[in-house]
Amino acid sequence: LIHTEYVIAARYYNNGAAPTPAGFASVSDWVPIAQLCINRPVSSESSTSETGSLDPRVRTAVSYFCRELYFTACLAAPIFKSVPRNSVQYSAESVDSFHRYVYQDVIEHKNHKEDDDNVMTKSRARQVLELEEGCTDLNLIKSAYKKKMLQLHPDRFVGVDRTEEEVKDAEKLYADSRLAFDALSSGVRDTSSTTASSSSNKSWYASLGGRSRTEFYGPIDLLTIDEAKGLFKAFKSAVAGLEYDTVMAFVARNQAAAIATTKSSAQ
Image: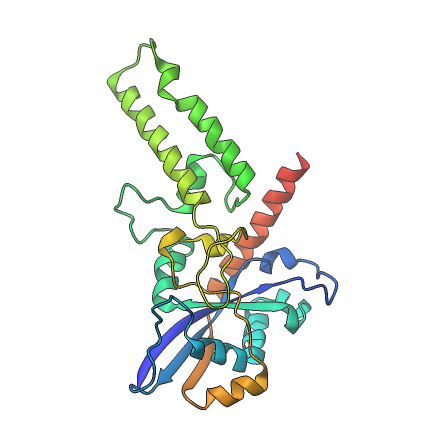
């Protein structure tokens, strides 16, 4: 058997079928909730696709375990209890991709290329641009970036007597500001159920890792339970919930981002 593992994330989606629940902002962006394991025969089709599409077994398993995934989400983040089951969407990505682009950034507060001067974590990027933690408002990001560029542009210092150290510090901060803007604004996308495509949906979770994160797929277009049962016989699969602290870290971040956006809109 060949064993593959994925991290499943969930989010609330307002499909108009029910009133928007209170506190929905904390789960309006993706929240990782479970780990999905799939065992398939060596002779079966590969789990990867030349077109970059999601392994159909993942779609089948998520559809089959839809009830269990919803229950898992409710256990880790009780706010999901107020969300109708048919208003919850799911995404998937390999465990390796999740750990490399999401877990290390959000939980461990570091980047997989931390020693690379051309890479900056989003947390550090917000510090450089003097933004509130969790800010994802593109207008605020652009405004903070433009402010930094005006403050640090080399033309402003023509004829100004500065030490060599001051010049180097200003050049470093100028370069860091450009890198911070790239880190916070690149790769924001809305992925379809079959391919990691680019779009205009402003999902902070989906934007982590930028264009390098090619194994994130969501929202997944779920099969009917009868369709899933028929296809599920070809392989074995199981799901298990993620640690409570891991899940709540994303819930708290979503809530903080919503509060920051509300404050900025009121100003």
